[in-house]
Image (cartoon, rainbow over all chains, first blue to last red; front, side, top):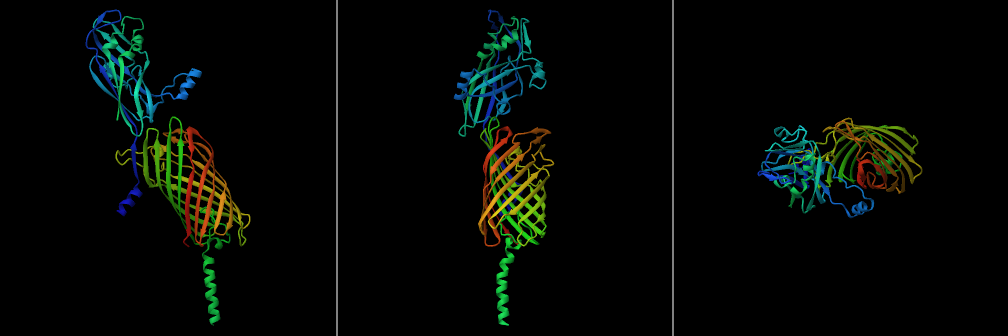
Length: 214
Length: 295
């Protein structure tokens, strides 16, 4: 026993315990049926891909911050980089059901009120970009009638998180983002000028988020 | 005959503690700690000290580093002008981050070997001042702290040492004003020449100037400012200035002499001002230790 203790002291002994863990998942409810666009024209989506370039947690503003924002009308600060954001870009299909594990974060304890999703052009390293031929593009929609929407616009959407409070008692959580592609495409006019930008801008109502804490 | 024998016995009895008394042997009654003591031929000194410290980082990279370390020090002086020393630490460190994770490591620190030269010394029977220089090297004897479950190394700030050979250089001066008052000054610096895991630790300089009041032979109190400067560390060749800067502490110490061979010291370093980059704030440092003359 004494020798074991001595060896441990000489060799060193270390451990890593605790720590928050938030897993992020993206579920896509695909657009498998023909949908009517805002002008009532019914179209069937043949090919659909979307690039999710970044997922970031944003802390709840404190009372002091809210007061300062009200007094000085300052801009809303974005979350910090590494411990609160997943920056690995993914290309997701809008025509096949999929559940994509985006990754895990270990953010500081506290209340997190918002989740930001960034849609930006995929680079060569984006997961799934090569198969979908999405390099340099944020969105690609190709309909059966030949309408084609694609481009390199970039946009982010902020979703409210109802109850993500991390503490010693609640270290783990799972955040599931759901994208209802069928509902989204009802808001997309593929024949509009600047159709890609307008399509990305209309994605908000089709997104929802569930939080499960443990 | 019996009279002479009695004189020899009495003389021996009186002389023995006097020769064994370190302060008496060097002719100066000031209670000193290692690095400030006056070497004398064949003096072998053993010391054990403990130090507890913490630093907090506020802001985006909020974290707290705490450490409790024990230093075993042995010094030997072959002459009254030269002293060799060895220091071996045992460290316990904890890094607590804002994500409620704790990383803990226990193990040996970096072994330091060095020598100290007495550059100048007052040659009177009771020397009133003593100036010395020291030169040493810290060897990377501390192992990489790895999580025993995952096998992954702990974060840089949780490592007991960043590895790499580190030369150290120091200078000290002790001046005795009278039997009760003395002034001491110390400067120590180190500069890591390398490091493991692509991280090269920061170089640093620490200076202490203090006044010591010794109302009794067995008790002394000293107080003075201690100033530390720490440089940037390098990660993959990129400068990381978090924690770099200057900080000042109030440095009170109490020293007790037990008998003629043992000195006990207890003290603190209370931060009074700091200008460290990256939101790093030094916390108080508490020290305690004892040293004894084996020879």
